[in-house]
Image (cartoon, rainbow, N blue to C red; front, top):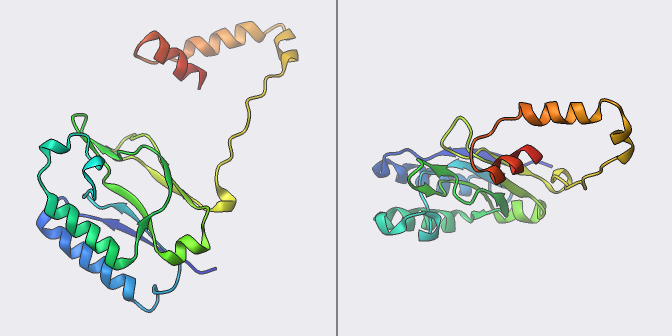
Length: 181
């Protein structure tokens, strides 16, 4: 199965972003892409809805949202189903959904069970993202505890040592939750 994956980056300069919109629209009509499963993912540096901004009332670029939304419509691209962080960028004062995983109709028909996963920001102010196809979608496995392990003579000592080496800051409840994970 042939598929096309494009990685996009929308510049921080709002005046230059229409160049990306034009390129996406032109690509959607290209013979090598048209009719094939196409995934476009990356940092678009634009939102398409006020709900994608944590403090929308302080955000004024309705033109940018409209232009990006129009580009996606003309290109036949939609967000694929996703989970994880809904805001994919933060500067610790505001958060926005600047990163997306988009697919065309052919992608959604060929990979109807595909899912995007947005993680927690690490070394970047953006959330990392992954795409899982239906056969690769992560499966939740049940937690299993083998009671016979508690009979081992070093069990309690080992658990206590491991528990005490994990150091997290925050409330007591948050620290316990993170240690359990």
